[in-house]
Length: 302
Length: 302
Image (tube, rainbow over all chains, first blue to last red; front, side, top):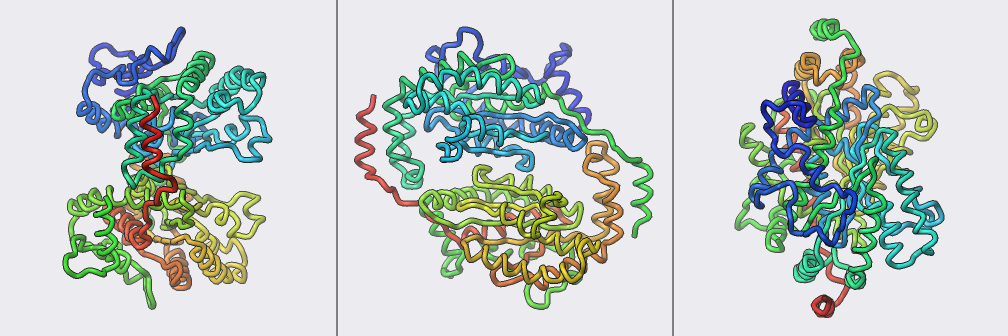
């Protein structure tokens, strides 16, 4: 195990040029990051940045990541038991049917649940509406060693809220700066923030809604409100563009994941988590006891 | 899917004798339940009740349960979205190294994390100690549609507390009846309670502790206190025996899972959850909207 982690460390930091076994290391982070001048409208939702294989190859690649991911997650968790303060926060945003649930099931589901905390942000409660919009977010931040996952987030407060004028423009327009200041503090406190937008096309949403209507076991996922929201497609795309433009910071960049192909979105989000964990490179804590003495004590028990 | 669930329903309830495809259906629940006159000391921790295959067969059997489990869990979750109140609570108890973490990782980890809530009960905080012992337990009960999982539980209040006389005997001795009354109410409110003790032998614990001491990446899991606790092995076994005897009720029976073989324990706990979900037999909610009207509306969108 120690040997494997040493190898991961090297390849993730690119410090070795002799032999790069995982050719895609760090490439998803680079390929998907929304940088200067990013335009959502120019990103093809069917494209597969950072990966040039097909579905079968993608599923194989994903299956191959499990062991490394498991070890890195356990190392992060173990580190915290020895006083480490670091954690990861994965934020998942996307239009209805963009596959957030599938990411929870297949990507987050592949992690050890003991080190994961999912928070699903629905429409705020009466109490939450009385509080500052970041109040409920702060309460849900991951503790040391954890991978926190947000299914929707504070970005709803500049997405649905903006599209439907739920608060005055003077109020939501200030939120971008508030979000940046907040995320900066979260990052500075030791939490690696990974913000993901699952980017689907309008046609793909139409097809996925049609499927929900067609299959009785999917009816419970459908709300008549989904079609009302669909009518605001363009306004949502614009709200996403602005949120990404204003809030893709050094401390907490946005990653926009083309999501018309579910297999790609799952691979990409897994790789993003994996690459960030490799960058953190948590280590197994050293024993805080005398190993030989304990071995002797154990041997002497019946 | 509908066809499959109909079949599961029949076989789990034993109402059909024509063709039983899953020969083990309900057998784990029956084989592992601690009934009248149960004696922990008589149960071999290396035995595999309800299953007569070896490790390879056990792992294959486990892998084959994923799809049915996923569908039943999703149906329980979906049911709650349509007003259903039912939930499941899986309680995992066991001596140190009995494999609680592995059950969380491999059994609970196989479930959809969106419908799971794990609570790990450590030594109570100062506030928790001031409250009645069931206070923190109540707060962690699963909501409708959820599978709650307790890693340790209120049983610690009649296990470690009893072994170490942390409260007067007059106090812990009343707790068995309090637990029974509490669990009865929990069950009556719609929560199916599955209480599992992972039963290992003293020799197996010794071997597992030795392994933790031998492998540097396992050192963080080891506490010198583990060996102090090991010295109380017999007292713990007795405390478990009493807890199981007094608290294996109709409303919330105990299941004692031989756990020296990890593959068996994982299979058995998965089967216990699966068999209970089959018994609940949650159904996909019916659409609360006009499907054809919505299909027409969708078709008319751009």
